[in-house]
Image 1 (cartoon, rainbow, N blue to C red):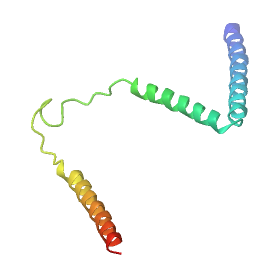
Image 2 (image 1 turned 30 degrees about the vertical axis):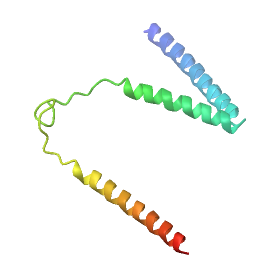
Image 3 (image 1 turned 45 degrees about the vertical axis):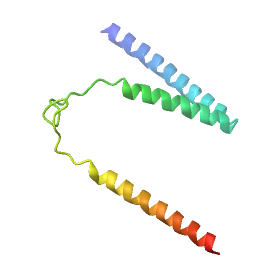
Amino acid sequence: MQYAKVFASIYEIVSQYINQMMWDFLTFIYLYIQRSKEMKIKILLVLFLTLSAVAFALPDPGGGEFPCGGEFGPCPIPIDGGVGILLASGIALGGAKWLKEKRNQQQ
């Protein structure tokens, strides 16, 4: 029973020490970031790359079979919806720029 109390007190001391180290580290990072905008960008880039690497390293959750019946089988999902909207908006933008240029040439 005494060992449990000793381990509990050691755990409490170590956790307080680690907590204090964490806050000291975060304070250091905060003060270091305040120096310049370039440093902020570097820190954010490092954090983004680290979190991206962690996200890609996660294991595959599984989920069973392929949604289309096979790895390269026929898929009943239409692809035209987004492509058609993108094509129509490109044509509209190009037509508007062409009309604007044509009107500028006439003046």
